[in-house]
Length: 237
Image 1: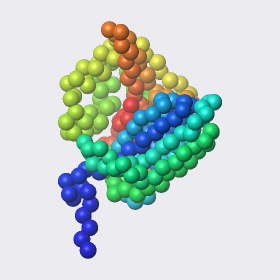
Image 2: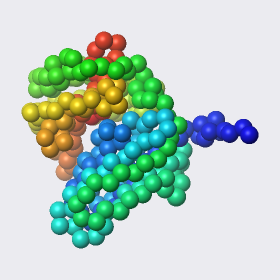
Image 3: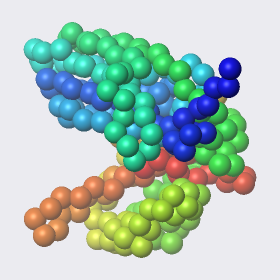
Image 4: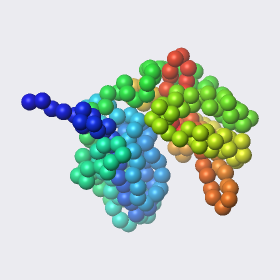
């Protein structure tokens, strides 16, 4: 029997986690890679980094903080730019505080995690993080963009509106209120193919806020890094 994958039929597979809570705080990790940490009541988070070919594990840690109702998390698959399948691949309900896993299968080779990324022992990463923070502190837009070069290239190739994105980030860097996190923890994920850098509160190394025209904006950087062409680059804000 000939089995055709969705990609062979013109579908670019995608996976996402749908969640609904009654409050509290949670974090979602895909094969150890932090996908989201927050306290929103409901939403969807896309699993676009960290998928492995074969079995994958979502780990959800939930702190109810007094919430009375159950927290619900489910993994769905589908095609890019289409609604996902209604039937979930895996789901879990968490009553009160707790940690649960959702296991599902995917056809996503780890080599596709980020083009050119190689496994690293983390040498030089902390220096790179400090250089990024220093560039942000002096509002050096060119250097900050250089740390994101492979990510920006990938975004451009996917058709992202780069002119608008670059203008927004430039404005945040030149006018925003800067917070540089300290006491950072460096953690390898995907067996060292990528590294996460987080403050104790799961915040990224760089956080910038800007209030303008009655709106509030935030830009972050430095959460996830890869080693490409003998240098460290940011691939996840």
